[in-house]
Image (cartoon, rainbow, N blue to C red; front, side):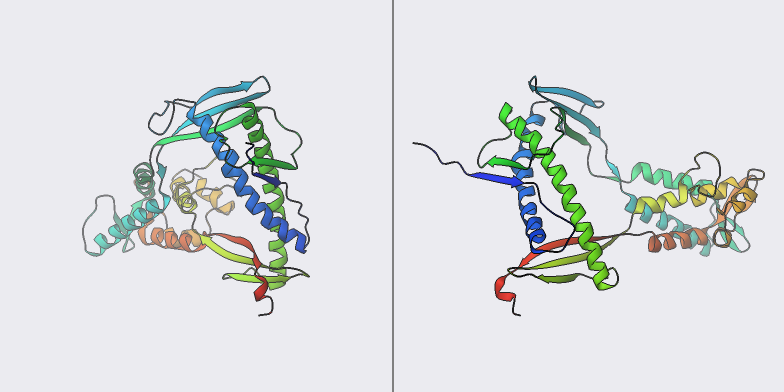
Length: 345
């Protein structure tokens, strides 16, 4: 008895930079097709390829290894395995550093003596180098996650020049099995996924710009714009998201100088302060705009016995300032179909 096969055909999205019913439909079709292609073909084939090598989170290589995976003379891959370490928790580093500075300030208020904390102009000061060392200590110890491996499947050949318009998926087929058919489908799927995502991103960028133009500014809260066409209606939802890039805040204190000092140099505050102990450098930093009036007001650097000291209160003020001003803003977009029974509401 012949078994009927269920086929899912995923097509490259046909999107243009214009607002019309077809583009909204294509966007929804692609969202569904992308997930089907990724989960049924791409992820399954990778899982099978990764299972063919002896390395995993519990059996990590000492260093990066690349293992050839050859299906036939026309289909060749490389399984790349890289050991990973626990990641630095920059948020925890920020919190710990702030707590440390607050502790020193509290101890000074309580007249608890710290060997490296001096009172200058009736305020507590500390060598900026001590603060750099403390941050580096936190960077080495405050980590999260687990040690494991990062695995990648690299296509050696064929490297498709042209993106296929359609990739068909046989529902229920095991694409983790290594065969000429599954390997070729995987190669085509990867190409289509990449190109389709580029097309989708371009359309969403256009749509976002149109929405901002319609609203007159970027939305401050979740906003939904309705689009009603002849047959169908759609909602374009915009969801603003603000995150704090804690790594950039830490860099604002300890980023080292690379090359010569220029007006475009990006140097951490504590590194800048420490540099003024070198003859003639302070004037250069001021001339290049790297030590402005705000910098001097906050830190009021002082040299004692060859070391540069900075105001503890100034360090805390800068930390709070960076937390408020160094932000990453994105807008997540989502397109949905308005149910027909809501058109008249």
